[in-house]
Image (cartoon, rainbow, N blue to C red; front, side, top):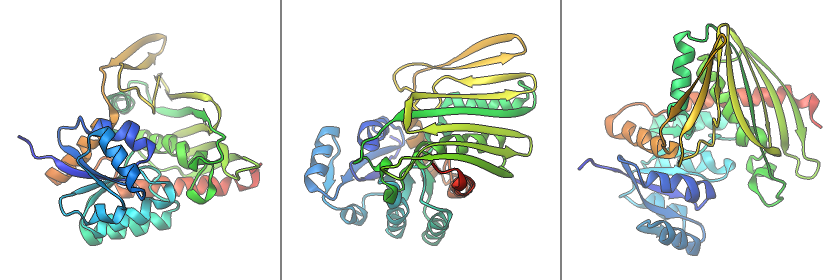
Length: 326
């Protein structure tokens, strides 16, 4: 039997309990063996519901558990770096939710902690392992759509819950941090370079103070990426890549369903085709890829150097959009 990496989860955050943990429980190379909450009752409830063997009433107890080899960190954004550093200090590998931190200085501190303690730390951009994205990148890089010229993306949902952490500036809330990081990561990945300059238009919620809608333009050496992300629009997501000979469209780029096939649409000149991908759970694939990097000594799918690049672009967009804040 293949040895599995023993994973502990910091907090009972919804992204973990609803999506990531159930998916990781189907992994071939890792297993979730413990979960922690600052509320012992909530930890025990989550453990019982999800069939996790051990529940801890504090994050410290989980990090002190010598049987835990890796940590999945789905805490609010402002706690990503502090607790990932503490996990590294405890000798644990870390898979941390996006965005990796609040600014590039935080990410630099995390990189230093990773190097100091010799652990692996990755940012949880699950799209990086989904077959529809890997195929899209393959098509673009093959030259089938000619030279890549542009990416267009819209990603939105509606949330005006005052208690939700996405609407709390002190927790690193806002549309850019929550979902704007996706088109930034995707454009850097598919263009395979960093933008030379950026511009942005930001609208802020007058009550919460967070950016509820942001449109950004990233200028790469060989093309442009244009995106709009919003926490106050009807739910929608779509990504298009345009080249000199054709284009590729991803139907459900970010919240790819784990229970049905996914599709991309390819147009070369006037010819069109649909490519369909079998049912898979991107969070299962992400967990296995991260665990395999630990077991085999390879690279994690999204290393901290990549996360730092994403954070620098987000900082540049916020700076560029300051004059437009409404």
